[in-house]
Structure formats: C-alpha cells, structure tokens
Length: 232
Length: 238
Image (cartoon, rainbow over all chains, first blue to last red; front, side):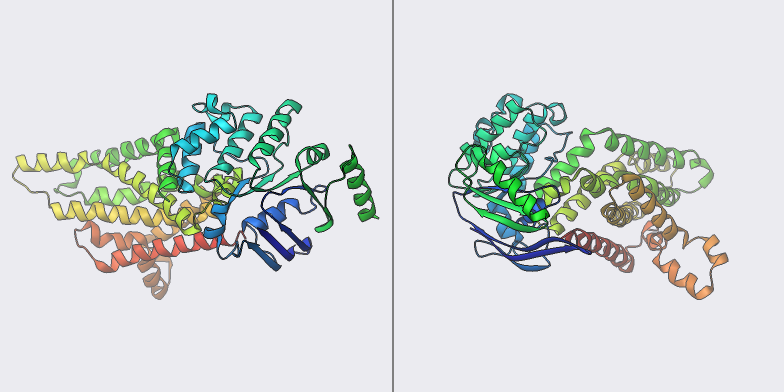
C-alpha cells in the first residue's frame, strides 16, 4: 500500500507539490494525468524516495522511502521518463546487471520476464540498436525484475507509434494483476483503456481523484473541464 | 554492489576508453623511465616512481571523469538510485573498479623491475626489492586517492570534460605544493602545511621503501574524505 499524506515539495520559490494526499491499494491501476509541469514526475520520485518532500508523510506499507529506501525499493519497479538505459550494453547484460542490483539470482525468472515482455529474440542485441518500442520493453523488463508489487511507470508510451503503444498498453494490463500500478501519460485514451482509477494533477495539486468516467471520451472531457476550471 | 563493480570493470575492458588510457599509460610510463635508464647510474626504480604521479594526474581523471557525470547526463543515475543499493555502495563500487583498473595499468610496467633485476644481477649489483614492493604499494595508494578526488569532481557536474579538467587541476595544485617552485613563492609557514598536504610528499617515504604509517594514514584519509563527500553529494540529490 502506498500512502501520501499532505505531501508538499518546494524547489526554491516554486511549489512543485501542494498537499498531495492519496492511498493506493494492491490491484489498482492508477492513471496519473496532468499538463506538463503539473507534478506527476515529482510525485513519482517522492514515492520512490528519490526526492525528499518539504512537508508531509510518504509510506510504502509502513516504511518511509527516504529513511528506509533499502527496505522500500525492492517492492517497487520503476520505469523513468525517457527510459534511460546503458546503450553500450546488450539486453541480456543489462537485465543481468539489474538482477544483480536487485539481488535476484534466478536466471529462469529473467527468461520468464523477457518472454513476458516479448524481447527474447533481442536478448543478444545491443541496446543502442533497438527501436524505441523495444527499448521501452527492456525498461519494463528491468522494472519487473525482483517481482515488485508496485510499478511506477512514468510516461511508458511516450514517443511510440500507435502499434507499439498498443503493445505496451496490453503489456501493462497483463503484468498489473496483483500489483499496484501508477502510470503517468499525456494520452487520455490510454487511461480509458487500462486505468481502474484516475488522478488528475495541476499546478502541484490533485484536482480529481476517483473512478474514470465510463462513457467513451469521458476522460478527455473530464480532463479538459477540470484543467480549464483550474486555469481560471 | 558486486553487480555494479562488475559492470564498471567490464565497461573499461569493453570500451576504447579503458584500453587506450591503460595502454597509453603503460607506454608513457615505460618510455619516460627507459629513455634515461643509463643516466640514473643506480639500480633503483625511484625515478620511475617519481614520474608516475605526474602521469596519474592525466590518466586517472581521464578514467574517472565519466563515472558519475555521465550517469547524471544520461539520467541513468535515476535508474541506479531506484535500485536497492545505498549511495555508499554505488560510490565504493565505482571507486574500487577504477582502483583495480589502475592496478592493471601498473602491471603493464612490471617489465621494468623484472628487467632491471635481471640486468643488475649480471653486473653484481642488487635491486633493493622492498623499495620496489613498497613503491608499487605507494602508487596504488596514490592512485586510490586521485581516484576518490576525481570521483568527487565527476559527481558535481554532468559534463565529463569539466570533471576531467577540475580534478586534473586540483591534483596538479596538490602536487606542486611539494615542489621547489612552491617553496620559492609561498610563505614559510604556509609552505610547510601545504607541503604536508601534497600527495607526492607522502609518497616520498614509500618510494624509498619505507612503510610509513603516517603516509598510509594520509592516503586512506584522502580516500575516506572524498568518498564521503561524493556520497553526501549523491544523497543531497533528494
């Protein structure tokens, strides 16, 4: 369970996050929406313990991700924005390295994960020679190593063509059973397709937290209405 | 920690940077000593041990400059920091892999003591072996200190060239504190302190074959100080 209670974060004079509060349970797929600079990535980094909040409490189960990061991080799989990888490595080398870092010794599990994200045919390829879609799948595979029950995916489909986007969406859906997934996106239809819950942020504050609208195009309507209201 | 250490070490062996740096170091170190070998007139490696710190001043920042700066530029630092490994383990892994790499570079110079031992044996003169062993030990200590300094400068920038230049410059200033030039321009009191802080002053007793605990303590302290500063820098990312 992820708990964020009145989280605020200031960068100099800028309020990046203002009193962010939400809880996320196992099995939820949360679509995190907001315009650029709304605070989506900062919130995700706070959950990971990469950024220390100025005020408020964050807990992963009962542990603080800042002071207990070695306890909380094995529970979290993270795909950062723009998916930074080591281009000089082969896919298998990179994933073996991540396994070592996460103390995951079973190579069978690694094969299973590569099968799951459909990159077995590329395991001996250099990362810098992969297409963007494949790179994204390598990033997802790395996030899945160690079987974390929380997945934080920062714009997992950004920059992909519609076919690759579709593959990644299906992949997220298939791996999300029994996990808590928080993913940020600019593509509103994505939230409609895979999220079970919707959180919209603007200017560092949550302006909506609840179920996604059921009708087609409902997410887009709701998003535009709330952002316009927030801007006024 | 083992995984990161292995990754860093493999990077050196799988990339031109590692090979070029180490081979160039080996060529320069051997050449600089051998070109004047008959001028020295003594069976000693001391001139070699005095040359190497100046070569380290260039080669170590070149090997170390990318270690954290590149991770920051490409944002892979975020991937590292999101894994269950402490900042201390990240820094130690990177530091240790580079110390080992410099050790490999020093192995490339082992032909010098071996050939000098064989040559001097023929003319009935003996190479003083403790001087060789303790001298090499001193070079490893010196390298470890330079690596920790360079690692720190790699951690405060995203630009490898800036990391290289700042660490080379700082090492250069530390080294010239022990020179006659510094003695001639600095006030006596200041000169004494700065001379003590110079790594080449501390290396001096070791290259004479004296296992001086004060020098060992000095190098270990420099390692600890700059590793600590690097860890603090990474922690402050939060």
